[in-house]
Length: 268
View: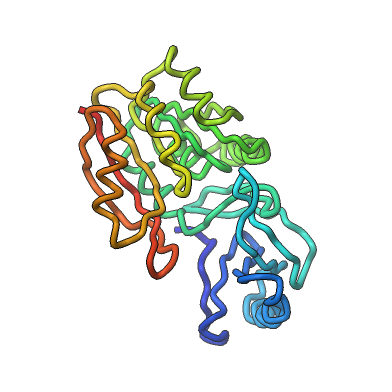
């Protein structure tokens, strides 16, 4: 499993949950007025978790790359680390890329249900969580794309870092997703498409039709209000031609009222 985790140590108070990415802890803060509280938590985190070297506060995300807005709280002033998921290593810079260690199980699961020989599109690859897991598990060709050039830089570095474990192939590109879909529509149809962009997914669903074929499986990650789940999923599926909803899974709870769901859709 992932060695990056959402920690809530019994020696910390109930509000002190934090993400661990490699040897960096990331504490959620509502705003800059909570910095003092964040520093108190950082002291406890470093005292209890000896392997953590740096603690940062996260105040939401910013920009088109969904990069965390971070504030150094305590420990070493470094933002680069190596995260570990199921024995695979990933270069991460928390100041330059979006990375959520809580998706490690999803990365692993998709790699296990994929098959040798598949041609896969990871449309919003980030640092390569899905792509590298899949290429390490199956003899597949994975086209990994992200609009963030730093994400692709770290993806390529992580491919090299895991080269002894990778049996497939990862081909990376740094393009806006809709532009890539239009380019690829003239060249390829994919067996499997991973779409992990939960807050903006609907803007890409119609163009993805250009790269599907009968038998294509899509894994769509969407942020959905829980009591609107059925309605929202039907709306998403309606944008994919000849689609069938195969499975819906809550991947991450985002808030008491919203979750990120994985919607598995097949093209008939």
